[in-house]
Image (cartoon, rainbow, N blue to C red; front, side):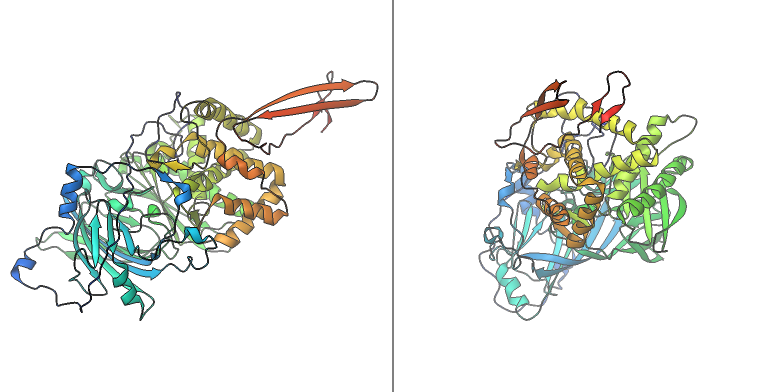
Length: 600
């Protein structure tokens, strides 16, 4: 998630779309609503009757969620405050996904095949209070104002009984726990199939799949996937997207992209004789729905390759509108530098055969780290020696690095819930700051720039009515927390780990963090525990930073005893924390005449 220079006027406007660190401030807010629903109370007891093959059925019945859509349009649900303490894992989760997107002008059909299993992590969860109620059933999030549910089946049965086998309510589709328990009693997984219809051309939220100009593009962080189809749209549900097939008009949309590796492509003719084509993408790594991406358009590209430290070849593609193709060379070189730096600094190697980047004017954010398909606004990618300043070159390099570094700190290991956003964003901002300083041989200069941004925007935010901890305790709309505090102050908290433990100790902590949690959705506490255990230190006091808002103040008093040659320094802190914060302080003494450091 990335953007521009992170300079806000107090109080800073809320940044609306996830994944954009507070570098851009010209975005618009989109409210998200979390609606509580009652689980189904009964389930079908008879065998699945044969599907209705009558002409009436073939002519196209109304959408299954039409009544709910009409009701919520007439009476929009009231937003509800969500609390971190109320987190509960789902009883039923999705382990595998296959999807087919059939793109036509004015209508896109999305067919999904979801493999549903019981959440095996619940049995391993020591916090009994955090275990969800087994009567919840399978909870699928879906925005009925964007998603028209055409069909629903469970293990091949497409004659499910409303209010018995499943219940639709605002923002939710819940499949009965009794129906699921009956099916899972004899096997380890069930298959849920849905067909929905969406209209990207009218999606003015720019969240989910939308069309801007001549390009179809997606944005799913934080809760945009529910505007594409019904799904467990939360970051702790990590599924393998085994197959994503995209079909579209071959002439209008020659480029079709999604996450993972390209495994199949082909062409066919439509009923009207127009040529259509398809591409199938497969991502072998589990990911939450917010990292899903899809792009379709008439795009140009540049291509390069990178050889990883283990000798694998990775094909690199930068796509853009044709007029911009000649301005993406510097971004490509920046990507290769970032890939090499992450290998050298943290031992982190890219994990797929292809890495795609899309740069478009119509993307309303800075950038988004979708797995293997990063999407950028052109302002974050394009560079031309004739018109681009040094500062813009550095900005492009930093943002390219930030989104690439998310492949491990955000994608391979992601957030358990959105309260943990700083876990991926604060950590990745720190990593992109280190990268920018080291590759340009200007660590000190880069540090000055970072501090100026923190003092110029984050301090103001922490002193105003929007002040909040880097890990908030509640929210009404999650999009309100893509802030300078979560990103920039979060990066300063990560930097303190590096200061306290040294860079070598920080690397040990990172190694243990990935060893423990690769492929998982975790918390800030898990990161702290990895740092503490890897270095054999107690960081309990340090953990107070995650729950303390405001800017602490440190005052000092000093005296020097010339006869004894003793210098005394007294430090006092004040903050909003009830207990003292752990604040590392570097101390040195300078000779007044020579200016040299005499006590390093």
